[in-house]
Length: 356
Image (cartoon, rainbow, N blue to C red; front, side, top):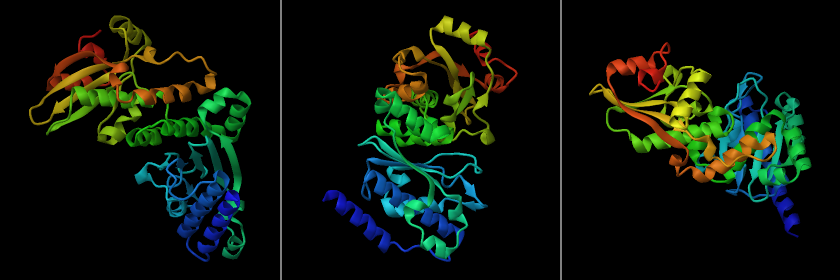
């Protein structure tokens, strides 16, 4: 009886929601979003405004036949009530020539539905569009088990999910599972820029929170990030601190493996960069060489494909305790000459501050 009521509800929604006919491409994208929403609600059986459901999509980033796709997001929100402001819908940054896709994930059931539009949807006539059922608008429509624990418990289930999601698995599985385990909005936003949520970008988030506690921003001050060595962590800073290449950072400086190992042996933690809080009025600053202790993650004993996913989920429980992983290898005062030397890519920043 409950299932019958659900499908009657979907039918009523379809009848009461007008199909856009003879409208500009933007409205075609809006309808595509609505059709994706109706399909997901039917497959996963959730109602409007269900905060247990997450939407991930590259809509708004993808461009199809010279048409931007942001209106698809409006269509999804109109039908499902899920939206970015509530932390239930996020746009994954992808190159604009990548195919458009949608992923809906229900953390209660651990199920997800993955959708890729049929290419004919974009160019079919309005009359053909009106005659096309919503669920036939997609060339790929698959329900998967997306819960990482269920996947680890059954390799056959994991293999099927990884096969279906293909290259998107490395993004969708950790993003949705970390979200289900409490990933906050700012970390999720950093993950959208990074294209996936891995231990590396989580490390950047933890480093930022550690530095904010040790050297909080005051009037006239700002952070300078010397990313040496540079890895996934550095994609957290553009989102959290508005530090972008066009505005002078993060400043990427290579660090040799031998220097990295020497620092690790001397300070018993892995070097993760140098961060300066600079006072532009007083022309002075404070600096921290930060270390990241990867050994404090639980040793991974599962399959290799799940290392990033499982470790990232584990780290969600430590977001309020950045000091578990992050430490100050050295704290120091900074003047204008030292700041210039630190920012010079010809220099080794750890030599500049006397650590090597």
